[in-house]
Amino acid sequence: MTGDRPRVAVFRPDDDRLAAARSLLDDLGAEAVADPMLAVEPTDATPRAADYVVFTSKTGAELVAAAGWEPGAATVVAIGPKTADALEAAGYAVDLVPEEFSSTGLVDLLADRAADATVEVARSDHGSPVLLDGLRAAGADVHETVLYRLVRPEGAGESAALAAAGALDAACFTSSLTVEHFLDAAAERGGRDAAVAGLNDAVVGVIGEPTCETAEARGIAVDVVASEATFEALARETVARLRADGG
Image (spheres, helix red, strand yellow):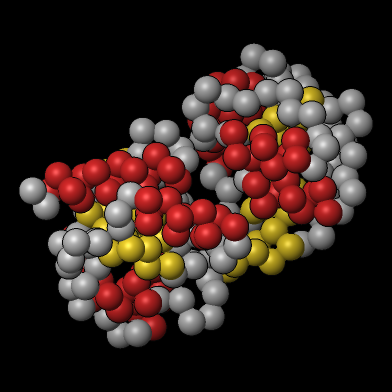
């Protein structure tokens, strides 16, 4: 490790999620290298009327609330507790949350319920096809509304430079897109190969198998796949692995 307080890169959007990540890592005895790899560009779209309306992020919940969306008679579904909390904080009743906080978990939850029903999936422009394909295979009439686009913020890449210099102890990737944006930022700085090598000397934690597959396909060795799809689990398990590896 680079010191008593290991450096851990986090790529959360620059809002309360990044602040919470900093605080959590501080509590875990680590120094957060805050390097947002995602910025939100709203599309101003709102979900269509449907039997089921599915939300896959806190951001989506906040955007529909700001737009004054009304669910009507729809069954409101949240991918996990953070999304459910955001919806409820905005005054929406959340009817269903899957046991596994993922696209696969949503398909398992809705496959029997939504056969022959209309399902509206409200999310970013980088949502997994697993959800749409799985619901359609179950017989649902599925429509996707893109609530926002996810772009890489200008100036991102401090963590890539640190990784290339061997000065990063760990990284916590929360989606395939954060992996891709990290590598794009490294390439812009002329150090993609060195950044990947630096990550492979560090501890790499990810949320979910799709993120793991993306990282490994690009030459990044993954050490930790979080036991549940939350940043808290990811951070705790990544730091624990880092401590264990450091003796």
